Length: 248
Image (tube, rainbow, N blue to C red; front, top):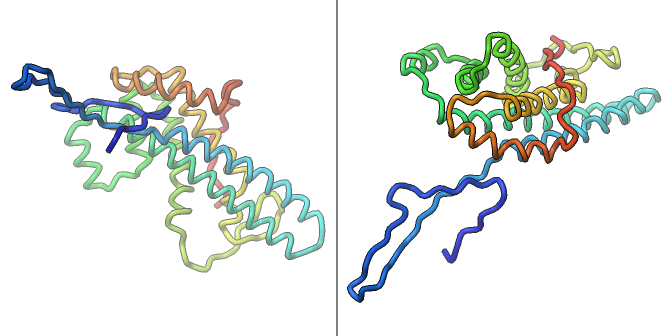
């Protein structure tokens, strides 16, 4: 290749043996350079989550207007559109967390016995992420408990979207329109999407601004993540809502 394009948000490293300098038979110096690159997609998925949330909130307003009228087709369409945008917002937020976790995981030393225990017991994803972040940021018990609860609900909704049940179930009461609906319309709605996106980006914002990394590499990463989050929230992050469990 003729060159490598380096863009904002990319990390550039020189692997072992990637830089060589030699002296040729003609007495001239010769050199070669190999680089590795990585683009951080965590803020990208945060951005997508925020955009889908804006769509979900607009769809919610359309749904409210539709349900003030009597056109049944419009009611159904409004529910579907709010569901689609909300599910995408929730999924994007969960992927942002996975991307963040993958950046931190490599710099946290876990006891081999703990890793084996996770494999044997098939420990939940949210529990593993919580433990890695606890170790990576010196989290206190209260902070760890809040993080664990938020992650549990976020990953629960993510799993429901990624692994939807094909079973026919009893309708759930939609808490805003007070009628029974198919379960997806009760779980994936703008109100839950707002809580999930706000909780996700709020956790990342707090760790980037107030976290206490246990490793210099984590510190370096947070220094690069921080300004990209500020671009998403130039006036600061809004108050964080708890990712409350959806209706059951």
